[in-house]
Image (cartoon, rainbow, N blue to C red; front, side, top):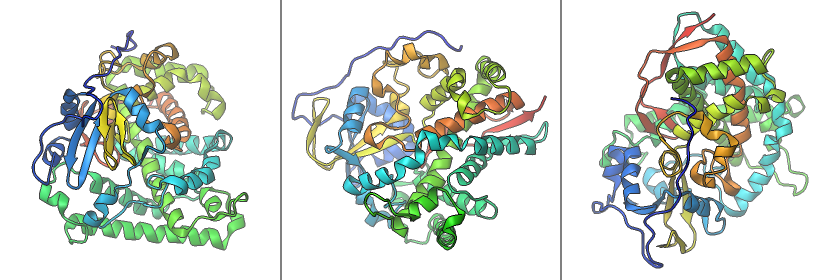
Length: 462
């Protein structure tokens, strides 16, 4: 049932006395809790929360704490100076590969502040409004290519769509032959982050050992690196021809005469081209999976689109698409694309009454916090009305944090929400998508939260 009333409960559990370390499950020597996590990554955190709101767990070389209460999540995300992003330094020697270490996701301290200050204007609301037509055009082109009655792999369709939007709006190039190169790199990054189905021994194998998995990853990333080098060379050769994200990164910042190194630019391109398009693609996939299971909500989205819009959506329409926004937010609650955020305590501190030693890794599992019945009634149900403003105001601030929070809040948050509010109503007006695969697919923890099997739908055009 859709749009029932809700009333959150409050209160933290499991706080110990000052100076105590957090409780947690027993682990194995050396491996710690690795075997439990690999067996069922999301289920592992459902087990951890039984120990309280601040829970200790261990992995090779890593002491970690999982945090489940919104107040403590907020303490971590807002605690700049006490907590920094975990950049997985402890695993670099073991894994022998890094994912965009100089990109915005993993830099820290002054380097991160400098990068964020430089990049933030590129995601300003005024600039984003200019991307509206790219979002609309790409979506209309995708729908036009679908045949009535055709069966689609929806997650793949949305991945191509969001990648096309990103490259045309932020990077001013058509995908062409680069499409498969970027897609292959995204697939291999996802696969390398997916530990489901691996044995503990496989997990500990360094990437220089030529397993099939590692060779495939190396080939994909080598091709991606060559593509990035070509893009940089094209911009440097014809700087006056482009006015896009990449060209701006190649220019100096007037205030500080700061210019980015090629390594930084390369890693930002990985971050935005790969992670940026895949997160939104998964948000769209899970949104339409939920709408297919909830026809009343699907009908409300279509009614709103036909009422508010007299043609394709524009940036001016977005504030009026309130039903669409609530549907998107509820999908992000149930299936947050990032799945989990990572931080590190850079000094000894206290969290929820427990002592947190310096160097402890902090795990913030969005998928667990977002489905906690203390903050959401019937948390497993799809109820977009939870996000009416009067109801949202009753919840703790960090009961819902799909884009993170604090100074490190996702820089592409407004871009992503703008995409969702363009694409969802266009689809609702133009096609009906009938679910033909499992209505409740298992979910894998990869670089982004992914359905374990393809989401297949059949197209019906009026």
